[in-house]
Image 1 (tube, rainbow, N blue to C red):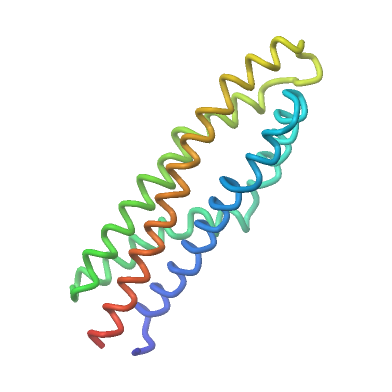
Image 2: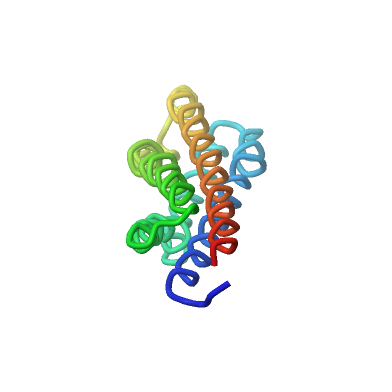
Amino acid sequence: MEFNIETVLLSTTILLTGLTAGLCFTWTNAVTPGIGQMDDFGFLYAFQQMNRLIVNPTFILVFFGPFVLNIALIYLKYLNADKSFWFLVVATMLFTLGVAFVTVFKNVPLNEMLDRTDLTASTSEELKALRQKFETPWKQWHLVRTLSAIASFVMLLVGLILNTQSS
């Protein structure tokens, strides 16, 4: 494999996409089922705290870095398209639509709704209603992110293999 800007971009994109897929997978398979066992207040409070802490520079880099890097990679590959190009396009579309857009337009609004709520001032009925309004849609949209991140990661790996074969 030739070491150039394209290789560095592809490797970094694969790494960050893999980290995002792992993060999503862990939340889908351990975090949300685990806190799902808690009562309404505990569940909502735990989710509220995790949402507040997860948005940090490292998370932003790992979670949204692939979006930017995929676009740069597509641009570079377009100039000299080979058989890996369309796998990279599909990976970019999966990540952009299934991870970035779903996060911004579906999960974040649910997180913001939860964050605006003073849980300690809410009645048990209000907590139950908030959880019902929040939990199922959040988990459904998160599953879309998880599957999209994993599929994007696989497409990038196929692109790497094809890129290596054409070098």
